[in-house]
Length: 182
Length: 158
Image 1 (cartoon, rainbow over the protein chains, first blue to last red):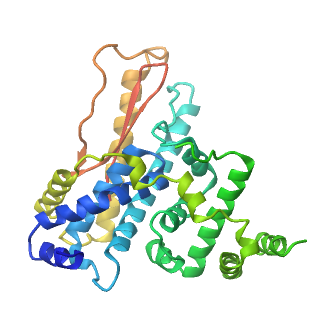
Image 2: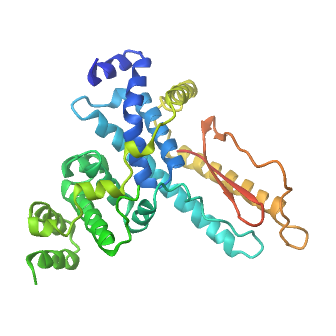
């Protein structure tokens, strides 16, 4: 049974068929989320939430488009949403930490970062640049397909990708990103 | 200045996205400019791929349970709620979270003279699940390294 037949079966109420989809896409989705969020725990949560959303709204999927890219789009929005909430959370607790009557707080755990290289990338590249780079390098997407996931023009996606590749090259030349350390 | 240096300089000087898009498209196709960009294999080496993650837990039971739970509550199928109601619900959820956090900080964190009192040792803090309006809520837990104080932030998932 191919993917389109599987999706059709899911829409007819056969939820078990979605299990195959979960098995197939869990790895790429989690990897993409790790590259965007830098934290495996958050990435797994976002991946799970993405698949729940996809399962609930499968009727909204347009079969003319790539199912994989549709999942990437949902994941991107969920991950961006989480990053925004974390930013608000950090801002709130930064203010609380500045108050001497309140306890100092530790930055939310970043120790879950999967590699030193990824940690450096997280500092230097924006979430959109990281996503564009991951979609291009790991998933083989073109600038137009990346634009579809990000919801922007192909030209803008090309700029994100260009920035990401240039920054990675500079970091490699400076020796900040150790190659082959993973 | 070399050809790629000129392209790079133009890219830096002109912040217009349309122009940058054209320069980026040129750099993708031009071998000279391409040497200033990381190649696909180089980018792959610094990013995490699915193979790097090793064996993943089977999340299908959680996905099925999560989607079934939301179908039952009708939260996902009832369509978007009126804007004012959604804003009020979000504000209410946020206010509750701030109140609870402030209460926790005041109750567990400060003594009568404002000095910090470490929480009782023993029995680690555990939080398994948090829900607001019958839906899973985003939960952030912060533990300060020295004071043995745990702060919990629960935010409504819109």
